Length: 181
Image (cartoon, rainbow, N blue to C red; front, side, top):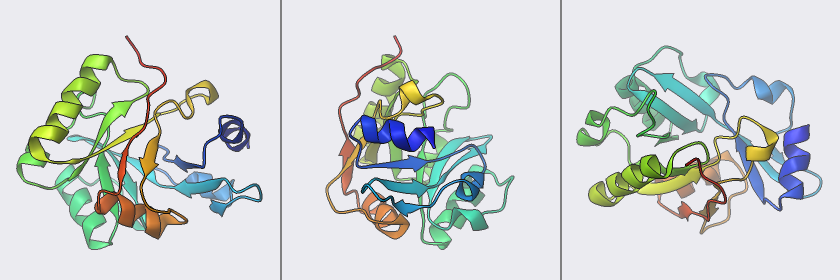
């Protein structure tokens, strides 16, 4: 798969593949450590009318068509993790009431497809509300892969480790190499 060879060439330790409202990629790849040591994990970018959420854990079991409060409750109940993706993007921004109600404690503060201003607003939100900040490349092409990685401060070897690290705040945005003006 091209994604895996590109990740290797960019020196990434791992990739999380989060397709929109689908985990179909699991039929095309083997999740876990690849023969060369690259870790591949699968989540989902779940679309709601209150914003998009990157969800991790047993996401294959999620019902489709949930609103954000229902989704976040389901993810929490299954022991997963949910990140508010690109919360200030011009289209499908996150409804701020999600944070007012303390339904989500993880927020993407750097996104490879966001403007600097959108990322600044997300960073301010994370700081003001003491949310755990992550970054994401939001890669829709190979050239975008690895643009905005998240650094983990504990070992991540599988989905369970990823969920635990996210929910415990054992992560931080790494250097974002490119950004939309």
